[in-house]
Image 1 (cartoon, rainbow, N blue to C red):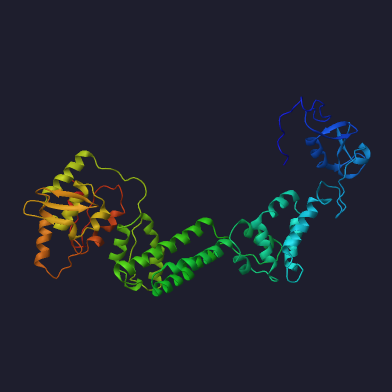
Image 2 (cartoon, rainbow, N blue to C red; image 1 turned 90 degrees about the horizontal axis):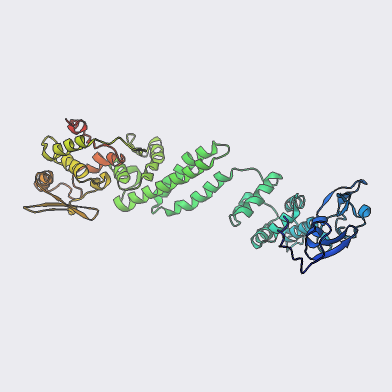
Length: 443
């Protein structure tokens, strides 16, 4: 691509160019007149067939048509000393194509043997045959490109594994594609290969060897099996597989560090709490759970709640007031259900925060009840404090009962509600025997 012209300078260059009529520095005088540097470069790069039948560089002009040197009388050296073709000379009397070929040969020659491997000769031939050798020269002059070519020169036999050891990037990818195109290397799906290489490194993030073994099986028999069935592997499938591995690693590490358990001991409460206390991307554990069920590693009735996208319809002000009134005074709900409803409906707390509520966040005195959620103390005036006091009384009466969680099974019971962001409050039953709350249809 020609460089843009600088502004004319008639005072410095009073004589105009015979071809462009511009006032620029003149570099030659040809039969049609003085020629500026811009037109001189353009003339050297003009190729075609002259009226006399000569094919090559046509630097001259006859009746405004390009003409060869012989017909136009233009004195110009465009004869390459290496190949003998007419072309713009680049260095040492050689054309750009010959310089590119020599440079590629030098970089791909094994320094120990002094010869270039037959497989690498394909690269030299492909570069030499480029339609625009000047682009090839610009590319091959870059230091990182020369480093890759010199590394390839050290291997008498090329394989995909050899190229995998080179620095990842466009240069390595270009070399690989070039070798595949010319049948030096067999074709392979690069996204699949990239996933396999990435997965090997990703598995090292697991904290236990047992989880590494499980993840390796999941990757091989689920994710890779799926990717191998595609031709080619799509970018979206590649990214989904990576995300599945990442979420599975986080889940396994969470099981090990937070609950000191393994995959074969996973319960529904674990999955619900995992989803309730993290971002919605945790729903991508679904693929792993389904595979684990199929592999008979976990119970077959485990479920992962899907993330609900979009906006749910909102309740009217009258409906909201009716629900609040029922929650505040209704005695039909069990204390645990009523507390959960009060925190969400009256105090607008997030369901996932309520599901993770523990007794150490609750302060009970003779006069007040205070619940600390996310560092924000919430004071429960009567009658809203009734369910907390009732639950506290039950905890005291049953000293063997776990005191770390506010109520047994609260994460299992309500975690699904955390996935319903923006939904109208609806309280599910704690078990199949508990009647559904009238809060679904306030009167």
